[in-house]
Length: 206
Image 1 (cartoon, rainbow, N blue to C red):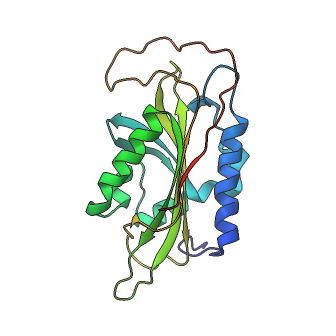
Image 2: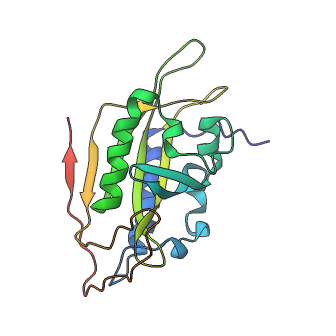
């Protein structure tokens, strides 16, 4: 039986996983809108699937997992489908996650954060990266996201909870403004634009 608590823990392997998911998301851009949830084909990123997930915005700063890879589930020690993304984080880290989710949905923006799971008895310190990539729904509202969570090293037994780590954070606004649907609002038509969205990179090395 494949043990998904263990994997290639090199930095290169982790970066390759995140890069593959981001490259696929970039390839889905169309002239008039963000990549759409319905366009995501898991088979196109099959080698990265264990570390990927899809979330849906259900309230300001709250995103619920609709699809989660096996490595993601292993972090939680259970099937994460239907769980809030905040479940993966320690209570003191959830405010940072909430802000990151709202930046991703409302700007919209690509967000990438360093994450760590603290060392404890019988458990080693884990380091990783969380990548969040906004998606539009069928009405053109930014209510979905493709994500990847790469964690370096063996997870060990039981659930692991994370906090924000040290290192570079990426906040990459997308120069387009699709409608952000208010939760429970009646969907509105997607605004038309004439050019492929451009990306603006902002890196915070603090």
